[in-house]
Image (cartoon, rainbow, N blue to C red):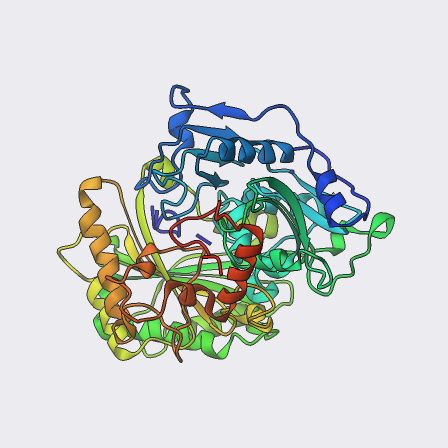
Length: 539
C-alpha cells in the first residue's frame, strides 16, 4: 500500500517462462541465467539520466557514474561484476518507490534499474507463477487476473515494484483475507556476492531441506537491498499442491479475486468536528478492528482506510471495500459504519457507494503514483497497532492535525485495516514478525518546495515523538504497539536524537527474527556489498 491517497497523500528477460529440470539448486541457478544483449548504460550526458537517478520522492536525487537498465538475468551478474571490479558501490531500483534515499546515496556510483525486467509467466516445472523483479504491482494484478483469474494480496499503489514490495512482506487490501504476499512466495532468485567478490545466481526455495532455505526465508520480510539483487520470485499459495509439469494448473496456484467489490466512501468535514468527536471516530474505528480481525472471520472481507488529514485538507475520509462474493456485504458495511460513528452527533457525508467487478474495482481503489510527476517531497513513518491509542495519544493526534501555523495540506495519518489471515502465520515462519496487530498506521507529510523541508519534517517527527513519548519516541512493542513496517523505512529510528527508547531500529522492524536475518546476511553477503542506512548488519 502506499493527492490524499498513500502516494498522493504524499501527494523475467524472456517473453516465456524458463522451464528448468530439477537438477539441484546449483544447476537450476546456472540454467536460469542467460545473458541477452548488453544492458543499456546511461551516464550523466545521456538525456535519460535525470529521469533514472530519482525515484518517487523528490527529496532525493542520485549522482551515480551510470545507470544500467537490465532486461535479462545474465545482465545482472555482469553488471554486478563490473561494478565490483571497478570498486564502485551499487544499488538497485525497481519501481522507484523507496521513501528514503537508499538508492540515491552519494556513495552509490552504479544503479541497476530493473524496471524493464518485468515478465510474468507460468512455470510448469515449478508449479508456480514466476514474476521478474522489475514488474509493478499493477502489471502483476492485471496479468494474473486476465490470464488465470488469480491475484496476490499486495499493495494498492500500482506503480510500486515487486522487488522491494514482496521482499518486505507485501501488504494490501486483500491481506486480511489471504495474508501477506510473502506468505505466497515459494522461491526467489537472487544474485549474491561471495567472500571472493564473485557474483553468482542462487535460487532459494521454501523447501526446508533445500540448501538455500534460509535465503528464501530472509526474502519473506527482510526487505530489499540486503542480501543481493533479487531477480525473480515464484508464487504459490500455502496449502496448494506443488504439482508440476503437465498436471500443474496456473488457475489453482494463487487466490481467486473477488468477483465484485462493494466500495463505499464517506467524509466528515473538519468544520463539523470538535476534539471529542474526532477522537471518538478514531477510537471507534480501531476498536471495531480489535473485535473483527480474527483469521477466517466474516469481517475480514472488509478492508478500510481512515485518512486523518490535517485540518487544512478540509476533511477526514473513510473508504471501505468489501468482497461481495459471499453476500451480506451491505449489512456488514452498515454495521461497520454504525460502529465507527457510534456516539458521534455529526453524520458523515456519503461520497461513493457502488459495486464494481474486480478488474475495475482494484484500479478504482488504487493510489496513483504521481508523486514523481508532481515533484513531491515526502517523509513517512509507521507503526503497527495492536490496541487503540490512549486518550493522551488521541489528544496528540488532534493537536498536530489542527496546528494552525503549519502548511499541512499534505500531512496526516493513515489507519489501514490489518489482521485477519495475516495473523494466522507464526511470527517466525516468515521474516515479517508482526502477526497480531489489527491496524497498520502511517504518519506522513508531502510538499513541493524545498524551502519547507524543515517545517514539514519537523511536523511529522514531532507528531511521532510525542505520540510515542512514553516509549522513547518510537513504537516499542507493548500491549498497544508492535514496532514498524520495513517497507515504510524511516532512518530516524536509527538516530538516537529521535529514538531514545534504548530499543534498536532492528528490533522495531524485525523483533526476534533479526538474529536469523543477520546470519543469512553473513552467509550470503559476507563483504556487505549490498547495504544502506537500514540494511541488515552481518552477525
